[in-house]
Amino acid sequence: MIKISVTLTGLDKVKKQLREFERKLPTVAAMAATMTAKDVKLELFGKMRTTFDRPTPYTLNSLYVEPATRSTMEARVRFKDHTYKANLPATYDSQGNLQGGWVAPQILGGGRQLKRSERRMRDRGIMRPNQFAVPGGGIKLDKYGNVSRAQMIQVLSRVQAFDGVGFDANTTARSLKRNKNARPYFVASPHDRRSKHLAPGIYERVGQWRVRPILLFVKSPHYRKRFMFYEVGNAVAASEFPLNFEKALKQARLWD
Image (tube, rainbow, N blue to C red):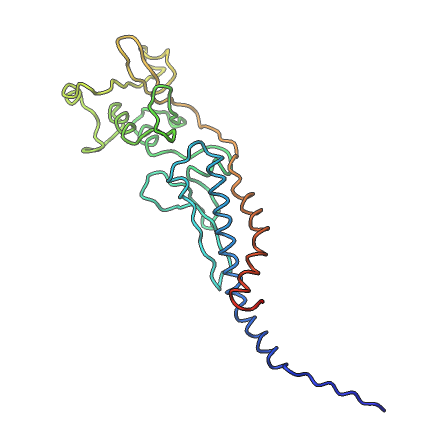
């Protein structure tokens, strides 16, 4: 009988390398996921510039990356849901799903949430509970196509939309007499015989007979889905994660 003896050398080294690979794998996966999320954010940043009309720096900087960890091995690209500004870019439910904010209708389609100015006007009875405010042809827009906060405060103050004092106090008849440059704004309502021929909204008097629309009151505006946030993110993740995983393996010295 012929006996064949095979001796394996370096087996202990291989076992050690496998244990090292197993130990570092969660870190490698987290690194690759975070790198991929950064790629997704960069691509979405470019899409925002081409999808939105003159996006503000605030809009362009509203995306951030939530890095992956060894325990989660999951990175996220999210919109900021904590900000000093009144209107949040996005709000999320307890499961982390996008549910509100001004960006949600652009991603999901449908109606939008109330702005703080609209809530004020509803509370004061200036707008009906089912109405929203949109810019009229006579309002001045900034270089990004938005109504400036200063102008909005001026309009709301003139039509008695505030209930406070100080910076956001309402304009009184006495203060109007002192301020010769105050804008003569008024609310047009179908129940007012003097303005029932106008579409509901806030107008500015120009001269003795002319008026121009500042804000128009409409039913809930409906937005079509146009910012392919999830579609772009999934496509980038599918193409870049394998490459980033290989990079992460090399950085962890687990792959030559």
